[in-house]
Image (cartoon, rainbow, N blue to C red; front, side, top):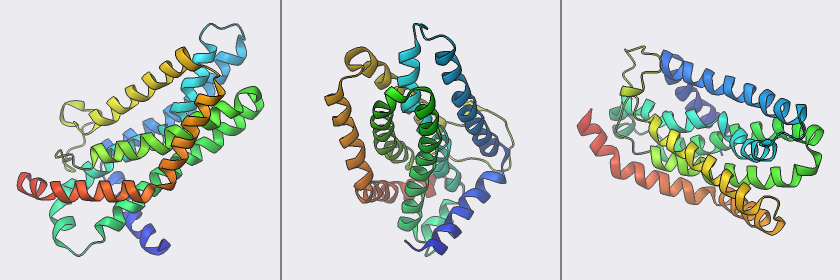
Length: 238
């Protein structure tokens, strides 16, 4: 990957984010949620070992923590760039390369979160480290590319002239992120109820997560083709 070009493309994304209060604030909220989740879950569990939801909280944290930093970037960045769809569709921009950069950057955000919580798990829940690695790998490898895939052809745009904070009525691009989060929570609960600490099952989902990560080129192709199929509808709407 051309690092210089990748950084230039990411800088365009961040210019879109920081020049409008709504996406900037929602990213701050995701960062705040990440930090609070890091503090809250270990405090609840370590403070009362007999806490009835301790195992469920741990399992849910294993699947949610890696996604918290990247969920709003992944779910909103295409809606942000839709505001300039004519430029993206008519100029000789490396659209496929831009999508590749966005996919890898979403992975990196999640892996960064994964590493931070890995150390917390090592200190507070050492017996659960294997399950944490399995669940988090599955979450990063499967959830992040799916979120990008479902939001890439969003026909909603952000009016960069408006600075409406948390106006979800006109922010329909958040719906896929919200639904995706509910899916992850549901998967976590199902895992807790049906499998809990079944080693074979966790090995299977670890392999699924790794396979999805190593097949990132497959997701990039799928996302790019979906964007290609929707760009003219976006131009017509704009």
